[in-house]
Amino acid sequence: MSAPAPNPAAVPASIAAFRKDRSSDLLQRCRDFSAMLDALRAEGDYLTQYRLELLSPLDHEIVVRDPLTSAPKRLVCFDSNSYLGLHLHPRVTAAARRALDEAGAGTPSAPLLSGTSRWLRDLEEVVAAFHDREAALVFPSGYAANIGILTGLLRPGDLAVRDRYVHASLHDGCRFSGARGGVYAHRDADAAARALARDAGGAGRLVVTDGVFSMHGSIAPIPELASVAHAAGALLMVDEAHATGVVGATGRGTEELFGLRGGIDVLMGTFSKAAGAAGGYVVGPRDLVDYLRFFAHAAVFTASLPAPVFAAVAEAFRLMGEDPEPRERLHANARRFTSALEALGVAPLATGTPIVAVRVGPQATLLRAGRELYDAGIRCGSVSYPAVPADGCLLRFTVNARHTAEEIDRTAETLARVAARHGFLGKASPAGPDASPFGEPS
Ligand code: PMP
Image (cartoon, rainbow, N blue to C red; front, side):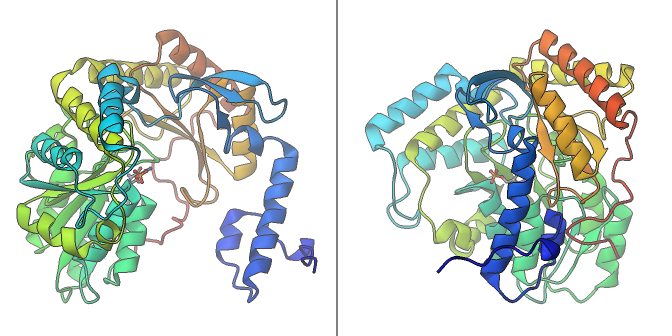
């Protein structure tokens, strides 16, 4: 039996519209979505920006298979989260190789059963010590960590309020937990205070924020949020995915940046950014970590990551603690890029972190501008809904320590030309008046 053809008149024109599709035929929703993707692919621009096939390591320069010609194509790459380049550091790759030889490709058992190897124990100790905490719990990914922490800690009847631009995993975790609450305006501690005051009845209470916001590159006002949370009897949970190893004099994240070491109650991070591999974690007092070890299903009902990942990440954390030079180079590179852009009339949404995002507008402009950058030999993140609001698409450049001055200057000049052509020179409204896909502040 052949599948019914998509009905072009009924096919929503954007991913945002598909979110609202409540048609009763689940497979028809998928077929309609495929029709939209096929139309995007046929235009070609989409293919140059999504699921590009890497033929090289993910580095400041990459080789991809050109989707239009199938030939290898070299690009300067501003779309890697390995801020310090540690995934390619010889000590890190050697540690992974040793663990591979000793433990094999995997440890396929849950960590509470036979999945706790000496590499996992070592990593837990290294990460807890890095953050000056008693204990650490490791998850298969940062996404899983946020779901596990929030659903493990919160119950229906509790209250969790979160910044409207937190990572999707925090939105999902808060919602999946069944706790009451909602979003407050971006980086607005007073709005967080009002949201807490509106619901005095929440049993357990939590304020949730990114430390460095993943899409905008802005930094949360951690001291103000900590005061607001603690004054209202709430704990502060901070996702330090883009802060660990990156901000603060020794890379300890936003706590160190603001001189508030130990001020975050529930500190979460990922191993998929500065540590260069994969996995997520939470650190804190032993009581909190022991509790989550049993109640965070995303760590309980799942297999351990392979030992080579643990070994690589532990070595990366040791390097982050020992050697400030890559972090200094990272920030010098980020400053060079943002200054060059500002001099050319392009206004990033925020400065002070290696995430340099430029607001482009609707998806059609994003795809066109992204294609022109690709043709000019530049790879960056083309960010559209649901990572950002539907009309708030971003070109996101993630600077790393391995970029050369020539790559940075050339990219800034090319981006300025593309921005002038598409009318997004100087567009900098930090949060934008646009609707968040995850809810509006009340
Ligand atoms: N939190 C933030 C702030 C992130 O940016 C990301 C990844 N983009 C995650 C959590 C999820 O981490 P992972 O990719 O390790 O699952």
